[in-house]
Length: 591
Ligand code: OXD
Ligand code: MN
Image (cartoon, rainbow, N blue to C red):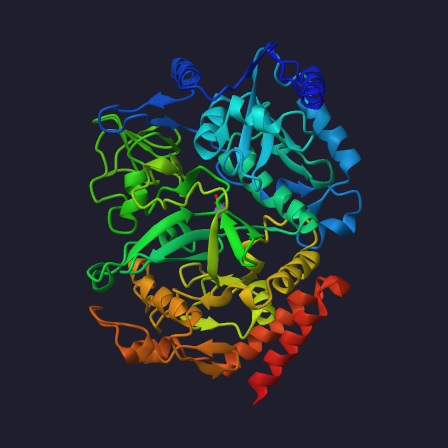
């Protein structure tokens, strides 16, 4: 077995090999030759299908087990020594118990299999802000996904040198037994153990497990932030680019906003939008005292259904090469892929995500799983920012929070200051739509879109946000909240969304530059309706914008009561500044 020159790394790998007992160990070196060799093996064994290499060069299809199609929040644990340190929003397991329990499941789990050692780097290799992880896995699918999503191979080992500062990740598909599926995080040990799953979010350990759960804990201790945010740049006709980061819960359009195509009125003036990231931002104080953001990933793990030439042409183009598709429809007519919402021409000869023959005319079930995915390399993205791999990241002018609120939240408002902005993020929520019977308007609080991803006590996380604001003082990005999802009385969305969201971003940037007015409301600053440009929009007028900006005090009073209940969970670990913000909101709503 090859060894690295790092004694701590070798020691840990020896221990893990003794536990899982693989037949052989292969180190992922980052070479194209090894990558192709593994694709060949996966295609020979049936684990992956090589797609039409003329139409989709470098693209493959994989199907997961039918019981293994999404992140499993109820089986995801934060294993801190003290239960209180995991906080009220996480599942907790005693680390001793977790190591013992999962140890049994891992024991001999790689017998007859190969263990792959994946040295990977979150962030550009060599950047002082980047961090190294080592994932041990028995899945070629995981290896190939990690090669797309992160930077892997010998260069990472070189960067690590003799340091013990790496995240130790162990993954085994084991029997894919849903009853014994566990995703355990040990933030105090820099360790992640994941067993009995083969689904991306549970097994690509660099992503949610490291870059959010472990990294958020590291960030708290080291003075930086790991956030569930997209990062995008907006270039004006003079060639100046301003960057914003935005946190939305799942299914609220992060990838779409990150890759948006400006409406004609802005395009013809020369505005451009550049994608830095679509899911995760690591944010630090830069030399100039501002907040700078890096996307630690190297690819996009996006939801396929609904992605099409209209909703997100840039994402679609990104998936036309070097992409792994998971649980989509296999189009047998030309050996390509299809999913619901791609176009109106589902293939007549096809295989569904469960591997069964599928005919769109007679099918009673969807062909692609609603959470089917593409894993696509950032290098294929037509609007990729040239700062994408800049080791320093990009300076943030604004931070945007958002959720899906049918009635309460206006199209956009600005927080009065950083502290108020932290309050706005901490009470972020999305509510179920009219489509879900019996559940209209049910609010799920998802602070900063981090509810499933914060690796420690959420009250301490809010405190950390407040501290970061103190570090940057008046150089802090301005904080905003947006809501693209207000509906009319028939439940139709009022705002067109997608590329037209740029119209709202333009007001946000104008505010950051001190070039736009605002109106003070009980919840924060709003635009004057005429300051949101509606030129060229069909059926949306300045009056529509005025309607989208109304603040219904009765609804907000209900919301404030709900926030108070939610805050109650955090006990004395809720920063007093946030309670004061809530009191102020209440008072404003009584006026
Ligand atoms: C998510 C994802 O579940 O990005 O948030 O995959
Ligand atoms: Mn995400």
